[in-house]
Structure formats: structure tokens, C-alpha cells
Image (cartoon, rainbow, N blue to C red):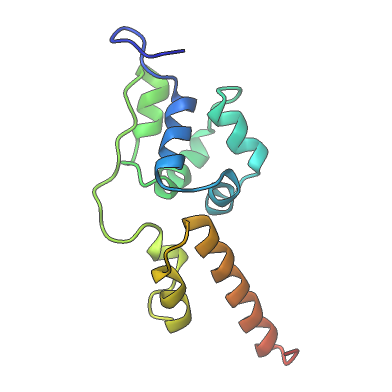
Length: 133
């Protein structure tokens, strides 16, 4: 459905557009929010609404202003990006005080690829701490 002045873009379409603008895959967003890829797909295709308890997580992951998802569901208000405070997801996802994570975050890769590499680095470090590596 194409939005017109009288019919705003559906929330699901706005969520998908925002995710894509941030170069996130559905899997990457699911990891950040703590939900399944199916949940991301359902919300983006307007088959379900995001529960109130998860909206803040979605807003943080998609770098949206607090409350913007609720406003969009309530009255069709467009999603509003948050004020930029630095690199996307640096805090809390990447520990910028950790030289390895900071180096990964500086790579010219999609956010989801950087997250995947950071997860692998963290898993390897945990394995080494346990004495298995």
C-alpha cells in the first residue's frame, strides 16, 4: 500500500525501511532485540504488533526516539530517528574499550556482519578463559 497524506505508511513497512537503512538483516535485528527472525518478519509484514514490553528494545536497536513505535501504532505518526550519539550500536553491543571489538567495529562491514564477528571473538575469549583453547 502506498502512503498518501491521508494514509500513512504502515508501521511494519516503516520498521523494515528503518532496518534496511541501518544495513541490518532480519537476523541481526533479531539478535539485538532478543526475538526470533519470524517475529521480525511478522512485525515488518504487519502480521503482528510489537508487544509494549519489547518496543524499547526495538527502538534502541533501530535507533529510534523513545515512544515512537507506540505513537506509530496509536495514531500513524511516522517513526522518528533518535538523536545521533555516535556509531550505531557501539554501546552497548561493541565494547569500544576492548581493542579487538573496537577494531571489528571500525571495519567496513554491515552491522550484522560486525555483530557476528564480535560474537565469535567473545565466544573464543570465553573458551580460552575456560582453558579450552
